[in-house]
Image (cartoon, rainbow, N blue to C red; front, side, top):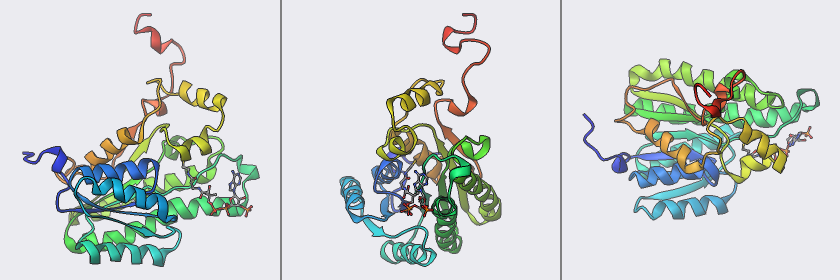
Length: 271
Ligand code: COA
């Protein structure tokens, strides 16, 4: 039986959110704070992280930030250890930090490949390993990886990101089964096109690109970081999602299912 109001679901707990200075990462951090949880945001630049911390503190929780590049395994481990030292535990880790740009595979330089794979795949493992050790020792915790549907269906121009996110999906399922018996849940969330500056600049830079992306979503709209964060909060919730591990929640208006091919889906079942 669920006895706690959804708005207190993280009371007494602490989350670390990578890439928490903007977009989906910021929205998840603020939503965690709204649920009564302490939150630490990690990223490369202090200024946007400070802004997230201010927004989180408005909910009366403790919040802080750490500047760190997720590509640096030692720095990530030190950041995670610092969270435990400062707050007493790390109950949730959100691996949200990402790097992305559209590039034909044949034009992608080895450095471009490495940059994205290092951030998305290696960065996720570094944070997961460091936080997982504390969670396993404490007997519980929740890890949430932010992926994209091209992790399983692929998409032209995203070979670096799709390969990395596909790796994160495999990591999610592998560690879910490896750690479930010791109380640590590992899930993923797959947002569709989300109204953030970073995603817009990287993935739909022109009006024509934007219209094409919108046309690919059966729900016929973009989503917001706050809407994605609400689903993230559900998966992070140790009560409502206690029995969910190794899963992927798509928050994409049906985008990955594709649009109607043989019939006009907007015309109703019988037209
Ligand atoms: N097209 C092709 N190659 C690109 C590119 C693009 N749009 N942007 C970067 N690269 C290549 C660079 O040319 C470089 O390779 P080279 O040395 O062979 O020339 C390599 O990627 C690394 O670029 P650099 O700018 O030095 O990397 P960085 O480590 O500073 O930045 C990125 C990493 C490239 C992933 C950068 O886009 C980033 O940090 N993004 C974070 C925010 C973001 O992407 N948000 C999107 C969310 S959907």
